[in-house]
Image (cartoon, rainbow, N blue to C red; front, side, top):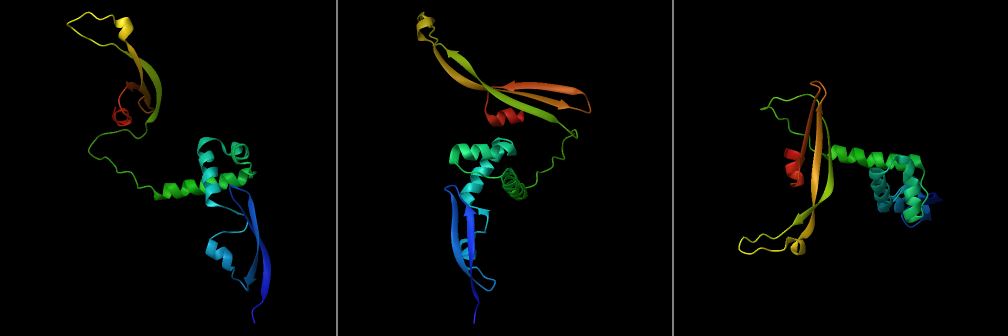
Length: 172
């Protein structure tokens, strides 16, 4: 004869804390194992929200953001643990970088790149007629990317800029 016990089970989700009473049979919990949840755990959508906030703000501000957006209170330590767990999973799934062996290089580069939107004024050009450019000009915006690279061992600084695509900015 199997011994039946009832155990309270709860986990956190984006909506609220969900609580059930589950019958356990010796050491198995049928609902927990089939639903892949753990007591005092966090649902995947809630983990995703915590991880999204963890990528944007410091760990100490994650509970404030969750309270503001979803009305949920989460301890800082749980937010930190969930964010770091997902960061380690992402880091482990990345392919190792290929080494470039056909070029001479340096051991360490310190680089920073930033972008800003700049207005570009376009005026039509027509060599046949003289056009009043004040009335025909139009304004559009382009992103300018500026970069600063330092080679610490050589005390050398390189400054560059481009108005091209992201790929062209990385290649410069």
